[in-house]
Figure 1 (tube, rainbow, N blue to C red):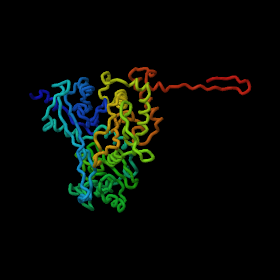
Figure 2: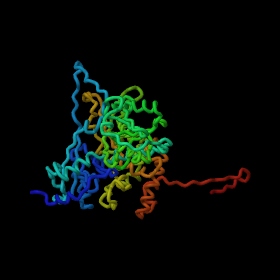
Figure 3: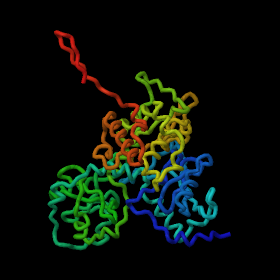
Figure 4: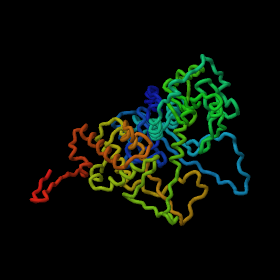
Length: 471
């Protein structure tokens, strides 16, 4: 029988560029798209919920919000074929595109109606094959995930305008034909192209570590002309953001008048679509792909441990300060007791990703339950052979990106990807917990950070009469 609620699907809108789409993992636990049930992503608010029977945060979200449809997202690692050592190596290309998620993983999606089945959601097998369902599915899967979006923002907060973008002088307006934006003006590269914001010259960028090709013709143009600022085609969005680089400063910069500068060459930002990764996104990829050594000083591999209280945290890019604080705090009895149990049923926030208590309960469950302390199931795609019998297989570890984005939001240091001091972060975390408790009408004395409170006493003693004074 056809779903009678499908007309409601027509009223839903695809996510905007600025909206967070929680398709990677549940917002209330660390169940993720790589697990058997995947993640149920709400098509109304883009919250992610797990469908696991013992937790079922997707069902709980529907019960609290009444939102009718979700898209179930599952991700699987694509198998790799090991090349025969005697076979000829593959032909090298002049320009190599960066490795994308769709190159490493395959995704399966399924539309579900929760009005038809409030317990588990009724599957609509053909719901995303055409029409509005396909539009919502394509838009959601092509958008940046919430985790990657927060990571990119953290890096981009360090970018500022410079004197060269602020004082940019352009010629009279003229239209650059589509053929003039098709490839580099000095070679045939069609990707990693940079448009000079002064004269409209199009040149390829420099080759980037990680597989992005380039012959440096945009840099050559700067050396010949002195034109400093350039924008990377393929990164321009309808919101007027893009990858802008200043060759004089030799750094990424902001162009506060980018839309007007592009209009000089007949480029309307409202019609642009992002098709390439920015330098920031490429840097994040390299940072996350870095594998820390798992051997001691003698080269002997560490032995992995598994079980409750033995769950690791992944590096999010200079996030060791946060990981050390969280692991230390949740080894203490006051923090174990304060965030034990499920807060989501009593939570009044519309989105768990914006609730500090939800995220602290999520960290507690992730680190202490043992649910995620298991040997790594999906080996990296680069691994051509399975580990030998005597080689240890470590756990995947948790990615506390949602927690980091929430706690660091609005802070000039902790919102960035720079290295930070662990003690300063712990102090700021305690302040955030106390502020949240005050907002909810909870006595600060009943919060977990109070276990760290201490008093100081000064004693002054006379060297002659030996009398003492205490302050």
